[in-house]
Length: 327
Image (cartoon, rainbow, N blue to C red; front, side, top):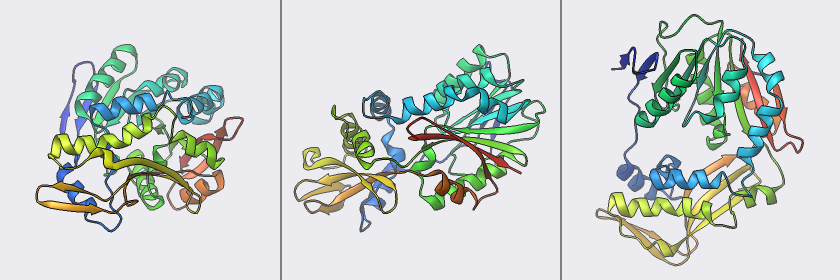
């Protein structure tokens, strides 16, 4: 059952698809029961975790945020020309909607902006602020981009095409098979003749990658270890945080950064009556971040209805803005 309200404050429409927010306790117990203990990175983002991530993006070693911004702004004229006019924008994982400014202001005759995020309260607040600042209609969809998203046909004014916008290299946090499934769902959501603008983190010197996830200030380490603090606080888990350390490395065989929490000595995590033993050196796998070359990305995209139309990069070829077309 969906909730569709018009108007919703300053928003043209608000569509609540009631996304599954997960069950932290069940997912923690299930993940810790695996041979390679793991947990979904979705649980990074409680309030302390979100604040720590904001600090990560300002770290000297963490290149993706500023490099992506530079690629978009430097190539804005060419990107906007390649997109065309009379477009409705659908931003996946919009967050605070800060990264959309240049695109909304640059596009020729955009007809609407739709912000999509899983956090309902934050979504309504940020999209409402955007609605007050823009002359075009702004709508919001509360949804999880790992699930199908169907947009009612009468939500917004008639547009020539939809443009999906997915910055932040978030596609790289998905395993390739999950990335393909996401792009297939996006094709169904946005329909024929749509375009999709992606931010993609590219393969580069492993030393640069390793440094980006092991900053000198230890902010990424604190972000990773916050998962254990959240387990203690929300699940009443019995564990010693000092028994674990942040461990991030580049797996060259599969072109991805892996983040883990590694036991520095034999220890346990106990949730309810479930005890999970860790040997020294054993890890809890918390996140992946795949890095792509343009040919590898193109090969992945060819398994979907999309095609890579054009890519723009920075002078060091560290990051790419990639425009896909669905026709």
